[in-house]
Length: 89
Image 1 (cartoon, rainbow, N blue to C red):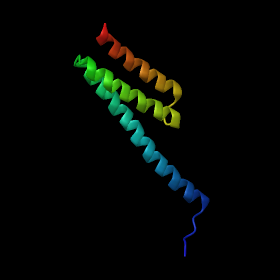
Image 2 (image 1 turned 180 degrees about the vertical axis):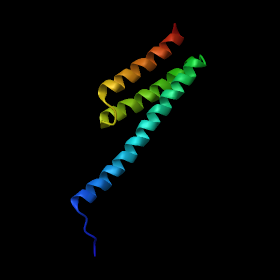
Image 3 (image 1 turned 120 degrees about the horizontal axis):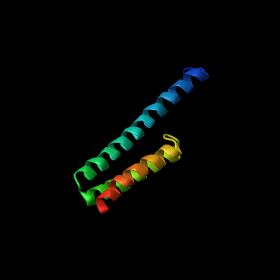
Image 4 (image 1 turned 60 degrees about the vertical axis):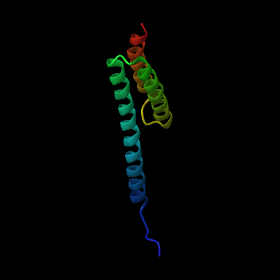
């Protein structure tokens, strides 16, 4: 026999599951950003550009899912792009 849950209990379980997933996505975005900054400060142009592409993909994905806001995603991408563009100059 299946146990019965109230709708509040079900909602709590769903929210907790989403919170954990969103936390993982945010963490991976922060890790990718750190890789870009580390490569840029090390003056490794090739590594910085490849890690930037990866970070942009992750940020766009998170913004599409609503995990981070659209303007926050644009701001993060812009700042990292400026950091990498300094290496090209």
